Image 1 (cartoon, rainbow, N blue to C red):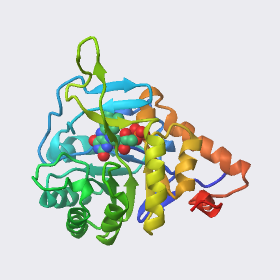
Image 2 (cartoon, protein in one colour):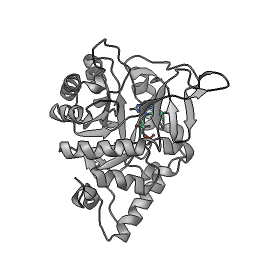
Image 3 (cartoon, rainbow, N blue to C red):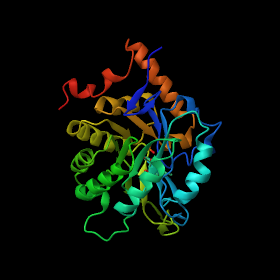
Image 4 (spheres, rainbow, N blue to C red):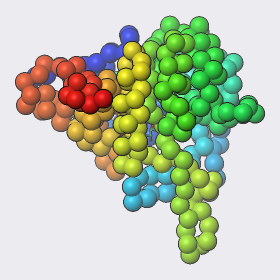
Length: 307
Ligand SMILES: Cc1cc2nc3c(=O)[nH]c(=O)nc-3n(C[C@H](O)[C@H](O)[C@H](O)COP(=O)(O)O)c2cc1C
């Protein structure tokens, strides 16, 4: 039986298949539906300092090539998250990663400390694609200097592995990735959704209550795959691929582009078995190739003649 385990610092994962933030809520909602035993880690829904109601409905819209969402970071706020949701999630048989979203540097630091000091939390993911409350020239996700400040401050507040989730919206994702790495990130998640919208022609109105939202699913795979390719060539810390992973081969594409692990989100909505099927598919491919672990695949496409 091949060994699918991978690690990001002290975050030890039995498979490279992580669940993406926001797509399985606080985890416990999916008990009995997802085989958490096949999952490397569960990234919980992004939590903010104050509770947020999120955007007005409709918040989801299916498209031919993916899903649009405009949830607007609805969450119960850090206090209730730690008191109520975390104890429930900690019964699940997979390590928990807290995803935190701050409006400014201080909030990120506060959230990283509060989540990081809980023993149920194995790692902290900084969601830097949050709505921008600071009025600055560049939004946080596109500003390497601000990202550096956020990561430096969060780093001082927790010794748990720190993952930074980048946005494909950033003009220069590589510079943002390098700034996060220099500031002490243990891994980079590449990446979040892309902006998108659809219009209901009969209603002559946007299909989402918020008009625009984030595009995930199949359309995002080639976009974020190219970013994983670029980023993994420019940093030394592990990269986690996210965007459109539905099959073991999709996961392998990210790994061969340079990722150590992947996150699965939208695919869970159409088939909650997707994460475990991806993990078992990876095991079968390793067996077929006579490999004992996934490491020989990491960056393999580059070694095979890619730039
Ligand atoms: C309904 C929905 C809610 C999401 N909420 C969050 C969130 O709270 N925090 C976050 O970092 N990403 C969030 N995402 C982005 C996913 O974590 C993931 O990065 C993205 O959807 C791309 O992966 P996928 O194509 O496998 O879904 C959300 C995505 C969806 C579809």
